[in-house]
Amino acid sequence: MKVLILAALLCMHSAVTHAATRAAPVSNSTASSIEEGLLPPEYLGQCPSGWFKKGSRCFLMVTSKKNWNDAAKHCVGQQGSLASVQSSDEYNFLQTMVTLSGQSSAWIGGFYFQGAWLWIDSAGFYYTNWKVQNTLKYPCLQLNSNGGWSNIYCKKIYAFICARKLSC
Figure 1 (cartoon, rainbow, N blue to C red):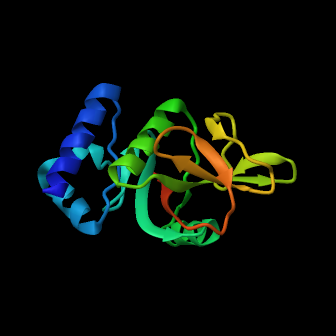
Figure 2: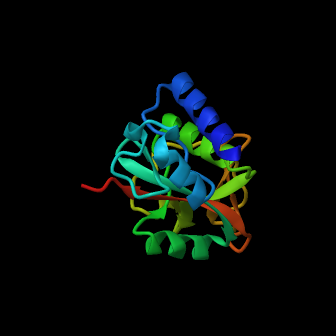
């Protein structure tokens, strides 16, 4: 039943935003159900099982909780990185992933280093959506399900979002 609800919510999100992708599932069983036909195949694109396409990238919502460094290592093990956010449309997509997975926040790939905010995947840090910008002694970014992102202590444990480029 949760799979059907998730699929229905994902379809509604796409209709509202006219996005060409869907949020990632909460588990591999959800991904299998989606691949079996609950969502149209164009939303799977060339993404690995359990990942969902948005633009030219694939995203994975990981609900097992880790600190920022361990989350980053996990994403590298999945041939990706913690997600960068390049536009408001992409932010809305990621926020929907976090909300639909039942999380209140998730790590993303932003970090503060030598006077500048950077993305771990080396993308330009041009789009911002600060809810709260704490003192710079908190160098890691979390996306909040209720809007925006904030920088917090990197050793806290949260769910996280991985991203990778589409496969050829």
